[in-house]
Length: 146
Image (tube, rainbow, N blue to C red):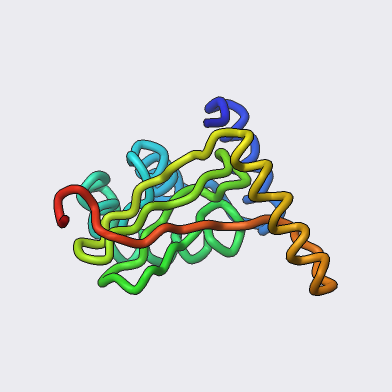
């Protein structure tokens, strides 16, 4: 994870680029996402940050997504999950439970990540495509739902 001061600076820069103010409500959304153990739903965010109004949180999540501060993950569950944008934190992937909707972050070993990057670049090059990044999500059943 990026150091807090660096993260704050990067977030403030993105706000400035999108003419957004760093309001108390937006700060509460970001703090809630930082404190989470992985991507979380809006209801979980509201539970962890009781000072947030649902309409304000939802509106701010949309603005923060447009500014590149938040990433919305939609995996077919009842609720979208939200996390800080990978460009602000670190590259990772997700394990997604198809039964309960749990989404968990996973980070691959550097050697494996490099192998994947090379394989994806080879595939893309064969198609005349230039990659900028990749996302790999694994779907299945978590240990509770198995």
